[in-house]
Length: 527
Image (cartoon, rainbow, N blue to C red; front, side):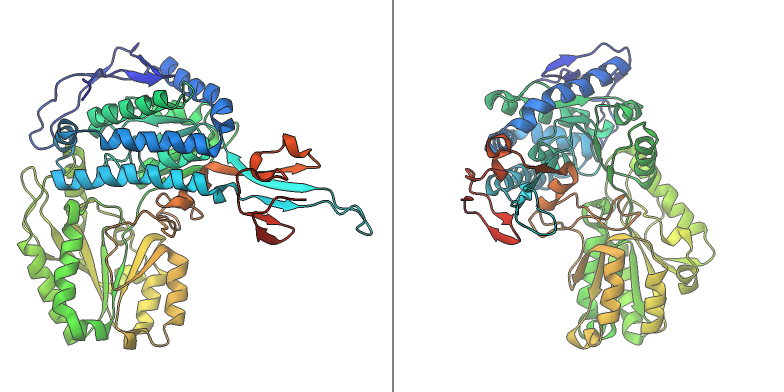
C-alpha cells in the first residue's frame, strides 16, 4: 500500500500550495492519525476543474470499449487493495472489517457493472428516423439521436459509505462511464481512505492511457462552493444531508449557467405494518425490524425511521416486542464525533416534544450511540409536524398508531418524498390495495413488500432516488445502471454524412448496438 502524501490530485499530479493542514482521526478513540492533508486553495480548485475540462474532449471521444477497459482496470486496482487499506478504512470510520470488505467488493462491482453497460451499448439511446424525401406535404430530413456526456462532473463523497458512495463510488463510476471527467471532493471523515482509492484510480488511468485530468481530487472544508460554481463543471453528484444538498442546489442555480445537482438527501423510509401480517408473524417482524433499525448503527440512508400500524391487540403486542428488542441492542460507535453530536441533538428534539413519548433505549451518554424507539401521536403526522418528517441519522425509529385504513392514507398524504416505502403484508391485506399502491408510487422511488429497506442491490432495475426531499431530482437514481442517465444529454444530427456521425448512429453500425430505427428496435446495419 502506498504511503499517505496528503496533497490534492490535479491533472495526474499532486499539488499542495495551501497553508491549511487537515488531519484525519481514529473514529473509535478520536486520536489523530499520522500525516496531514493540504486544503486546496482557490487556485487549485480552479486548476482541478480546468484539468477536467481539458480532459473532456479527449475522454468523451474515446470509444465505449476504451472507457470500459478503464473502469475494469479501476475495479482490478480496488480488488488488489490489501489488509492495510481495510485497516485504514476501519480506523477512520469505526465500521467493522466485514462491512468494509463487503463495501469494497460492491465498489469494484459497480465499476464492472458500468463497464458492461458500456459494452452492451444501450446507454447510447440511439434513435434513427431516416429521410423521407417524398413525404407530402413536406419531406422529412434524416434525423439521428444519441446521448453524450454532459462534461466535467463534481462529486462529493458521503460520510456513511467511505467506498461505495465515495471516491470510486457510484457517482464517480456513472460519470466516468458517461464520458465525463470527475473532480472529487474528499470527505473530511475519511481522507486517508480517499487518497488510497484515488491512487488506485490513477494507476488504472495510467495502465489504460487515459488523459490527464480524467480524475481529480481536492481536500478541504469550504472548497465545495468554488467547485460547484466553476464554469467548467456541468453537473454535481452528492450524497449527504438535506442542508448540504439544498446548499449545493442553490449554488448551482445561482450560476450564470445553472447546472443540475443530483443530490440524495433525506428520507425516513416509512414501514407500513398491515393487520393480517401482524396476526400471523408479529414477533418475527419485531425481531427483523429491530435488526434493520440498528444495522450499521442506523447510518444508512434507507434506515426505517417511521413505523405505522393500525390499532389492534396484535399491533400492541408487536410494539411491546419491538421495544424489548430495541432495548436489548448494544450501543455502537458512529462514523465520527460530528455524526454522534447530530444524533444526540435529534434524539433530544424527540424527547422534548410533548406529543412524542419514549418507548425504549438507554439514556444517551458517552461516545457511542444507543438505539432508541419513540411513539408519536397520529395527529402530529396528520398535521404535518416537521419533526416527524426529519431524518435522525442513527439507530432510531418513531412509531405512529392509526385508527383505520382510511387514516393510513391520510397519514401517507402528509408525508414528504422518500427513497423507500415498505408494506409488511399478507395477501389478504393487499386485496383491493390499488388505491394504496398508487399513493405509494407518488411518494417513493422504491416500493417493498415483506422486506426491509436497508440493503440496496446494485443492478439494472434498482432505483435509489425519489421525490424531494429524498433527492433533488426524482427522475434519476444514484444506484444501478440507470445512474448513468444523470450525466448524459441527447444530441440530434440532421442530414449528417454517415462517416461524421458517432459510431452508434452510423449506417454500418460497427458496434452492433441496438437502435430504434423508424420506430422499430433492431441492431442491423442500414442499407
